[in-house]
Length: 302
Image (cartoon, helix red, strand yellow):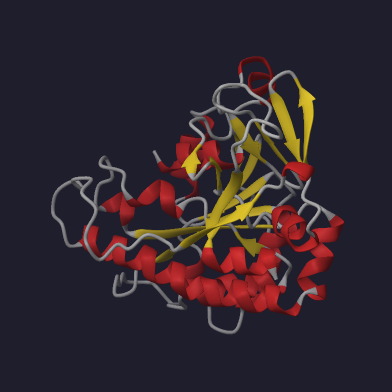
């Protein structure tokens, strides 16, 4: 179930799985067509993604930086889990909050991509055991420009570090609520689960070019917006027309070109989209934007 969400979010072909429950996770990934490895060495080979479950909570204090270096050396995307606060189990040696780990990854040039929490929060088929983890993903920006921005724009690190505390709260509230239930989560959103405040980042018509068929390409001329996109910070964003989300997210590029009808894809460095009526977004009189967390909107416009 959760393995399927990870595959859908990142489309890895080869994954390194680490932690005490690695065998079960490897089986779940392999059942979805992913090649999964459980390396025995301290330095796993480089793959598309590292999945780290039941590992960080067993990390001795003082060795956290070494563990993070090992994970980032192995892949450009790391998905890791930490226990819900207050969830104790015999053998746990490290109760650092997720924000601590996210800052450790940020120091290695990996940024937090909030793509798994929204997929996990409101699933009605998650049992207690499934939700007793806080699952996070960090990614290494793909473009050299975006990687350089982590050092060139001082507030980028500050905003990303501050954002982790807010995300911690949202995820922890959801997890605590469900951990106190004895049955399967009903799917009803608890009143304490407030949505992440969002803003709209405009997609100017001048930044849009026809690419192929019904598919249009966005290349932001605003430097900071382009850097945020290249750093992977807009993963999980929504493309909207006049404030209404386009209906088909993260679709294949050939389908966007051939079928259109509001299909779109947000990737590193650029965005491809089509309009719901397959008209030209530069001249059809509608406005287009990205719906992103408020702290990223301020950064992109800064």
